Image 1 (cartoon, one colour):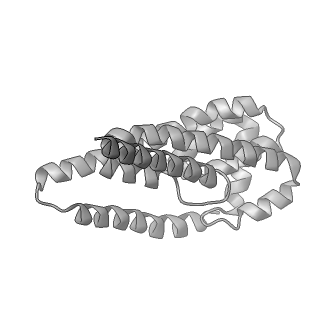
Image 2: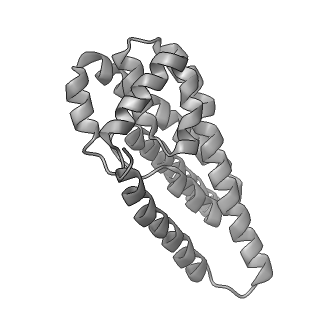
Image 3: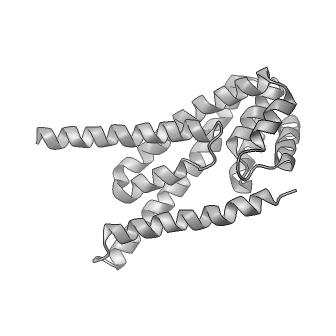
Length: 197
């Protein structure tokens, strides 16, 4: 019993740790969203999945603070040049976020997920425009957490429904479909976003 509990605690710590690190990485220069990991946890440990979205949020807030600080410290051209090297980020997208931030402030963060605009661009624009870090982080909570939770809930729900309809389906097959879906999404998403002008 003690051994099983220790293994469960170790697994939970790993799942939350990866979610936090992934959230931080995506808020800086990594281009794959932490939703991939939190939804993967949902496939294997549904009861743990929502908790990992909070861990991903914590990492994202830390990464967003770092990116905002960096945007404040370096020149606009330096940060712009660095970010357009990230897959699916274009110069036009960077400038659009700058305009949105200037016009709507941190409330513009709420439009990012629906438009496929990376959080890091809002963090950089906030720092560049010398806006309040605390206000940026406050808006980041709904701006990040809502999408993390929705994607994770949908993936978990689909996996549970699939297992009910096909009770004999193997975990390996469910995992293969899961990773294939994310692979297809990014194979479509990166070229489409890269063509945005």
